[in-house]
Image 1 (cartoon, rainbow over the protein chains, first blue to last red):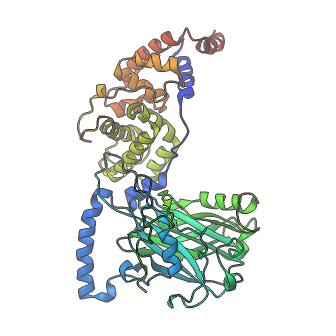
Image 2: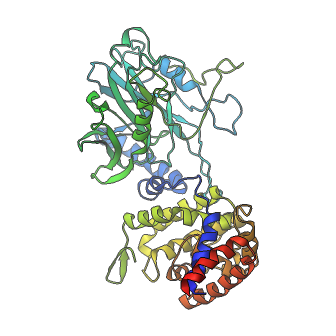
Image 3: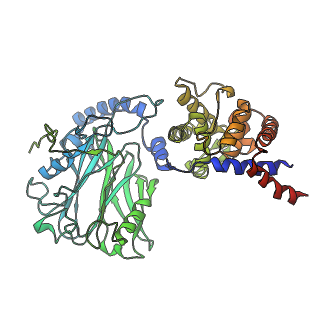
Length: 332
Length: 183
């Protein structure tokens, strides 16, 4: 028997034993860890170096301490009570004591966006406990992950308490991301008020809104770009949020005309400040349109869809559990 | 070979690694699972191997194939994972430590039993050839042996495997049309 015939037979035998189930390939994670992120074991040292650099810059030349695309987390605006409540419902990952809060400190507002409806969208971010399953050979360095929440504010986002917002209802949850991931993306499409995430006077402003928001572990990101089926695109700058969040965030409004077939978003691209592509994700929009077009999947009213990434798989806390407080209180 | 050779060095782009990863993910993962014992840990090792390979890409001299070079890193990480001890990524690789077996023997019990009968080195070559779908040159680069050594070991292993499996009706069935066609 010739060698290639034997090869064929054995290949067939091995094919029967080939497992193509999960986990799935994740090139974005490799790219993020290899190119855009400091490895875990360097992150601790990097923090020390960065902290020294930041102190020097803050003392010497405050104006240059952060660019317009950076937010110093600890001095970012404080949250609305509704945002505090939403983050307080995030419980620790499996393995932590029951009903432990995942959020390490109050959320802060890191982005605002003026919407075509005249309202303002705010993006709140909070650091959360480490949710990563660390391979045993990766040196253990404690770090945290993060969660984020979008609220649409019908008023001045700086005037705490004036805003009625999406996210007020109990069914609304923040999205969560991991430093090891290049992209964690969420979206809100359509009449969010009808989906039960809002109340009263904000129903009209949210009736035709299309928001995409998310986080990235890539510090070097500078912009996101959403590409549409017709070849056009929308771009928005990203913002880097300092420790303890230490991640990049984005939020952009998609012109509502892009819910039409042939014009729909098909891919989100994360670009570095020099324009090079750091990561791309088409799956989120495939999921969106499957949900949007399917009456049994979308969960909300017709023409609406929403989703939040939850890659760390935190549990939901039962706030009626005895002794379960919010974990922190509003400073406002 | 992927990459571009310039003045004795090979300049590798991210796309070279991405192509290798995307085209061979399941082969890589399944062969690594034969070392680590399960698919999740094999995935973790594979991710880590590519991250390290990309970071160290300037040290790739082009003396073997890129796939073989990445495999050398992956082997050491898989051994670390399995043996729970430090193994230098720069040390010579002791192939006898790579004791591979089908991660889910119940799927192909006859094949799993036949593989277990092979010496460790032959078993390694068989997994790289038929799970990871590597060429002889890739296997030689990954294991730091000559192509002739790979060829000889695979010939012996093939005969042993087919000998063990020939009583299996599926194998007998699959042999007939090929033999008939070659006559």
